Image (cartoon, rainbow, N blue to C red; front, side, top):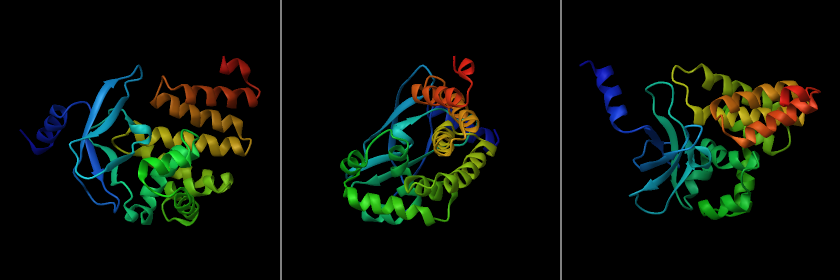
Length: 227
């Protein structure tokens, strides 16, 4: 058996989801992540088990993931609660900020979960606006109320994930939702509907993506398409 097929066999033997975990510093880390039963869209709620210290799973967003369409693992970020190094890592900060920017949770909820002060998180989120990475910068620009600049960065980040040999739903879904939100803020409803449609393709049973797409279509003057 070749190394490639052996690797694939090991991934399959590990179950429906295989994770590549990084820590607050962006370095590879070991963490036991368990997947529950899949929902109607084939997405799994994931959680930590048998981990030392006080670990917090901050990515995938809302601890939900679906199997990729290839052999690559699902990216996951696990930090220790209150680890100040996390706020020095733009990628980790953007991961914490994403559900807040999307309106899925509040900054106070994030502060309680991660062990950071809400004011410190807000300062870190705003600082993302000058980050080098497109995902990180896009989240920061959207957080600071600059959707026109945000959508440029987020669109690049989304297309990069869509062009990968192995496409990972839990990487594409939040980027598509962020792009759609930025476009809605610019009254670009037709294009926003397309991006929300991308999110819905990744997570077919997602009520948030469906409602966002319908709202965009209605505002674009296409209520029949929403129905």
